[in-house]
Image 1 (tube, helix red, strand yellow):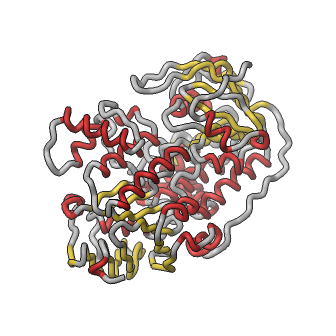
Image 2 (spheres, one colour):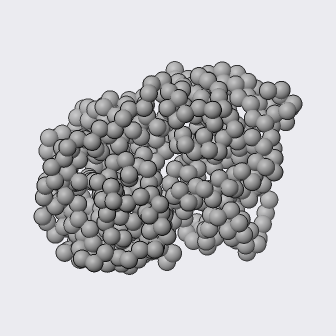
Image 3 (cartoon, helix red, strand yellow):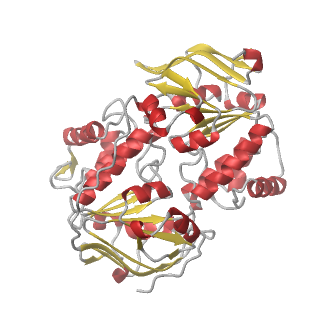
Length: 509
């Protein structure tokens, strides 16, 4: 493509971290009004490339041209001045500030808070991404934080919008609304660089695609002329695996929730209202729902982050509602937990992988990570190495900081850490958020294998496809209420989509 006709052209873009080359000799061109996908498996260099465009990372070599003119983008402020906006995969929000205060910090011109709050409401409602400007960020669900990032970028009226996994925690209905927005922006001349591991989205939305593998361009294509299988082949260099559903023999009830009601401690949150469910050994129960409908409150009650009446939660035959998180894990390693927030709740960014492995595995008598109250560093490193090796985590080893991993690789590490603890019960939230198509298939197969081995699994996910692929039974949470539980064979995504809007009658228990 001629550089004058391009909004953005990259030539020879290279970035190395020590001996690891994140990007090597990348070429990419995006025209005005084009929606262009950047594809690749976790660790392929996509996010590094986007950060160089946005001025977060400086390239070691290469040239950026903007509207046909060579430029150097030395900071995000310089990128925004050109007309470049970015929605990051990992949220860059201050949790103790409100939505409006967070957005004000990224604005390059001063704006009265009342006027900014009105603009946020107008833009968020116009684009179907409603968010209250006065809410504190630490009270928002992951999906709601995603909306804040998107609205913040749209307020800048960008000529080029970079979107790094923007739909990873959005429901199908919200995704369709977002796509309407993106197509409208493109029709007005805005160029969009779109990173996603959801290949059906790429086919539906994007005009062109550049594929990265091991930091290099491995191909370019029109995704509408490809199949999901051929796109996956270009991304990961192999065909997608088919799911194997091991024959599971249902056993004892490992988790029982009995008329759970819990008032939220968030003034904008959702109260849990008389929720009852049970999960048996060998069963996967999937809970779908639009983000912000009580998932966070339910997870807090199940994990022990918040305590309830003892009889409301039963784990492995023990009334556990009053037990804190650590005690629930020690019920014969009865409960392992994968939260939706991998940075902060799933892992500590400033700690090594070995240290993060210790955080939940310290009580395992088999691993012996702690002896006489002292950390056993060799054992910690060995366990972290097992997680890295068995779950194909791309990193610099057990001493790598959690913050240095790509989102998908950190997710694989957290999932691996919990699975290798050999639990009787797993509560898993958003297990494949931001994970590439090959790794997502791998993790979903791991869940199926666990169920086949007799583990009870409660899967909370906003990806309907995921639930229908792996779950035996499905329910919906909406406004803190739980729908009837149905076999996935006895319902459809369309029916579940209706239920996600709250149009169901609660099950009677």
